[in-house]
Image (tube, rainbow, N blue to C red):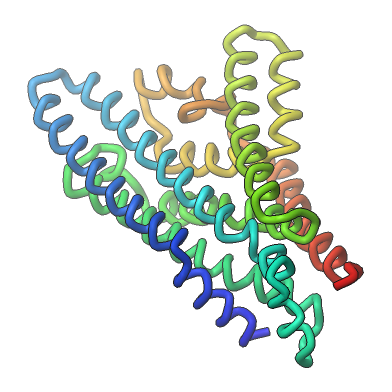
Length: 282
């Protein structure tokens, strides 16, 4: 399996998709740096409450867009991880060797998981470093515990998404699988917005609809919790942003039961992928 992990990593890094997304991520960090530079220069003339709100909004914007970049990269790399080799016939050369089909699927998953986790860690660290350079209060006030827990949740977003995408790669061709996974990812964001709207309306039916959507696509729940822990806010900032749960969501902490469900959700899809590929006629 170690050889399969290594091969997967090398293939992913060499793909044009990874190179292009890396360039886009670099450009995003540059643009965010420029935005912070001009924002902080203008905020020097504003009151402290406005500056606190602006810092929180800028921080959340940076975190959310970076999470979207990582999620899209994960989908694009994983969508054809198995189906792509089946379409080209390369899979025959691999499984003809003394390697179990389950090991093949797990090797693909672990290779892409390592890449996604490293990529997420680099982006997460870069955002905090840039925020510290520009003295964002949201970053300067962070404790080591907040950073570690938030980083873990932030990294789990692409890992959870990877489990589902790998399963889709055993069922469908590359393009349909990629489109479906992007839709599923966006659906999670919609679920958070529906839940937020239901909270403002004090309508339990709408809130329940948002929660149901989040059960189908729980990725946004992980991101929301990462943002809530990293940037909890205080005073007027908390009152203004708390009900938004970042940029969407109810603003309440996810329950232990929800985290348990997400764990079962991710592992379940990975096991289904291994089972599906094991029984597939190649």
